[in-house]
Length: 428
Image (cartoon, rainbow, N blue to C red; front, side):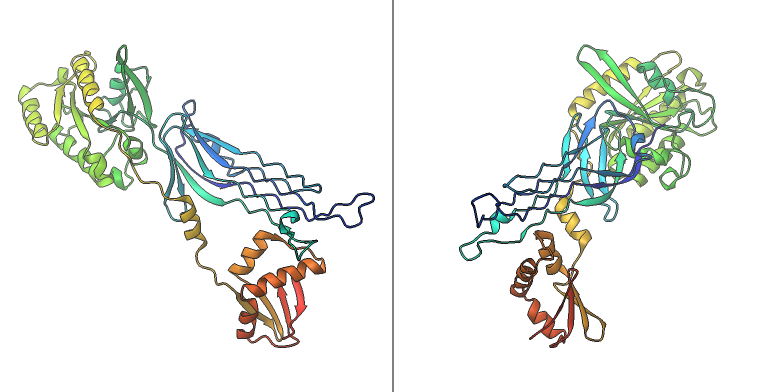
C-alpha cells in the first residue's frame, strides 16, 4: 500500500530531575549536599532511508516518544541519558507542523540525518545550589520537558524526470520500456493508481530516475480524477516528459491535450509550469495525417519546448529522447522547494503569549496564582513539601515580582493563596 501523508505526534525525552540529597556517613556529622544531576532526555532524529518507499509504518502508530533522562541520585551520581528516538522515513519526506503549516525538515538527500528536537536538559543536583550563606540547600533543578509537536509527514518522491499526461496516452508503457518499473498497462483510464519510479540506464555512469504518476485530467488541481493527489510527487523533478496521444484515439486533439495539462500544472504550482519540458508525441504509428504532427510541433515550439515524435509500441524515437534528457538533467541545478523554518521559533509561536502572573479569585478571600513566571520557576526547580524548599521557592517568586502582583490583584492580610499546589496565608 502506497501511503504518502500521515499525521503523528512526536515528543523528545524529558530531562531527569536533579537530586536533593546530603552526604550521610559514619563519623561525618554535617555532610554537605551531594545530589547528582539529572540525565538529558533523548533526541528525536529523522533519517532518510533509501530502503523505505512509503509512510505505511506510520499508519497505525501515531505517537513517537524519545526516552526520558533518569533522575540524579546521591553521591553526585548523574542520571542516565535517555535513548534517542530514531525515525526512518523515505527519501523526500517533509516534516511540517500541522498547526502553522510551516516546514520544519526536508529530508531530500539519501541517508540525511536531521535532529527535529533535542531532548530536555537534565536538572542540576542540589550540590550546585550551595553558597557561602546557604550550606545545605534543599532545592534542586528540575529536568526540562522535551518538546512535543503534532506534525504532518509528507512524501515527495525524488526523481529527475516526471511523466505527465492524460490517462491512456502511453506513460506506463513508456516507463516500462525504458526501465524496469513494471508499471501496470491497460486499455482503460487510470491504469496507474499510485506513483511509480523507474531507473533509466543509458550506459556506464549515465542513469536517471523517472516518476510516473496517475494520469491528469482537466480540473485535477481541484481534486478531479486521481492526478491531484500525486502532483506533489513531481515538484522535485528537474524536467518533465509530457506525453501526448498524437493520434487522438480518445477524441481530443493533441494541442487540446497539451494546453489543458499545462493549465493544470500551472494552477497547482508555477514552479511546475516553468520546468523544462520535452513533449513526446506518442502513437505516431497510428497517425493518419502527418500535417497534424507538424501543426502540433509548431504550437509546442512556440512555447520554447522540445517535441519528439515517438512510438512506444514500435520502440521508435525513444533513444534520442533519453540521451537529450541526460544532457538537460546535467545542466539543471537542484531546486529548493521550500525554506525550512526555525523549529524553536515555531514552538514559541505555537505557545503564544502568557501573562507573567495570572491571579484568579476562586471564592471570596481565596486566590490561585499561575502564569509564565510561575511555570518558568517550576520548570527549573524541584519544589518539595519540606518547609525550607517551599520558603526557597517563595523567596524566588518574591524576587521576580510576585508580591507586587498580589497587592495589585487586591490580596490582603489573611487571604488564602494557592500556588503550585501549595496553600498558605498571606501576611503583608
